Length: 281
Image 1 (cartoon, one colour):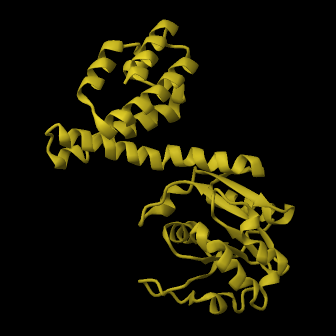
Image 2 (tube, helix red, strand yellow; image 1 turned 90 degrees about the vertical axis):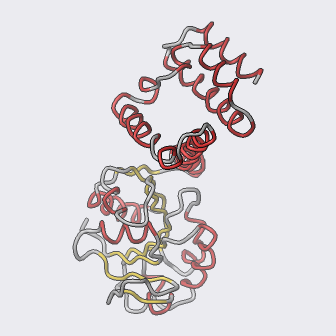
Image 3 (cartoon, one colour; image 1 turned 120 degrees about the vertical axis):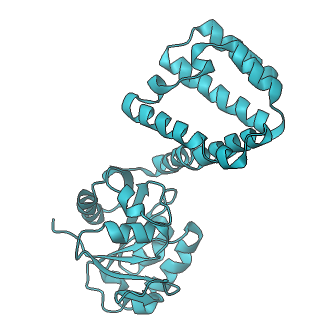
């Protein structure tokens, strides 16, 4: 299949990253509700101007917040020419039904979600090597697989039953990681470590841990007192933690117990002792 022509509506972090990652000549148009800071001759403000003149068969990527999908789909579905286009949204937790009005207008619809966290700048450099998820009919899936091949993305075709667990797992691996780093930095600040160091010193550790997890797998990469069965260290941690920090520590260490058990590296009696200690906490 030849490379698809792409139009992106919604130039937030993902929309900008995708636009910059596309092969030369693939992006026909960009658009959104407001004018971007950097002028672009291909940019059209508003749905009607964005859609006008797009060739039939263009892949339109709706890179908008989840709550905006239905209103945007209704707006596009009412416009001439919408039925001749292919529309996908980028939500990881929603299926093609989120833009059902477009299917009712005759358009093919689907999902194109990339399993990646995009910064405000430079996000296009993170796309190659990522995983993603797609849904939709046979033709739109074929177009998306061709696009993924050009982007260097490995795609999975998810069922309706798999989609929400997939997205929940992504939230744990990304959003929860950021929350843990922030909680750790706050523990350091409360312990009297200067804020300029507390906010930075855990990031290299997390980067090394991610490297090990990618190379070895999470179970083999697990280190620390839980997998070593070091009950005394965990008891000392609990003795100095309180409030939200203590509750978070207990919850995460219980999850580490599960990982340690699956790894087969920690004696069962030690895991039982650690779980009992955490349960008391």
